[in-house]
Image (tube, rainbow, N blue to C red):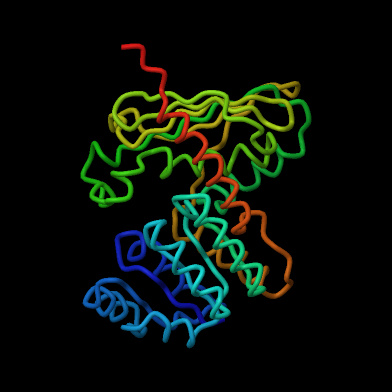
Length: 297
């Protein structure tokens, strides 16, 4: 499968390009970016072609991987699907429900495969744990904490305009939801949402299976407090999401495997665009509640 890369930022450079160029079943056919010189530089480093015209790239490949802000991703994903390209997308799928629905509609109409890269779902150890817990009945409650230090360190992602605008809810919220939904079931109701320090938010969710969950999300945690954890409690006892030895590159390679399988078989992957849309719908509801945060002052 010939695949192109959309994006030239730190995530494209450090994760997507190495994963695509090192994958045995992919031909890394080209790079397009909003900054032409950056596209040429990245393409040169990985021995591929830089494209000035994104539509020309779509015409030359079978699939595209996207490493761009969600607003840009959503619009280009629609165009790529209509051009017949399979889609390896990043999270969040889109910044609005309307844009997310447009991506899902384009995928369906074009009959292309889609996979949204939720990192934890494509790391071998955590993927196995999620599958195991999804088969267990009687979960009562869960607690998820995704605490990043993007804005409190010299992280290369700290200058990202969309992260500055949308915060932890939209950046790390998808990771937490990608773990909780397959285990506890779809979210029936966002029962509560409240602001914490800086961009930190707290959510309470009611799930279709009857369990509840709480989420704490932040990109402004003190570096010593940063980390991700998920705890499940139920009839089977207590279990914790295990740490994963896999970094982003092998996880992205597994996501590419999933895209190849979906394209060959026509069977959608659990983390397809439709799942990405559902995550977007939940985040949008939480954002709406946060806008009316019950301030009593």
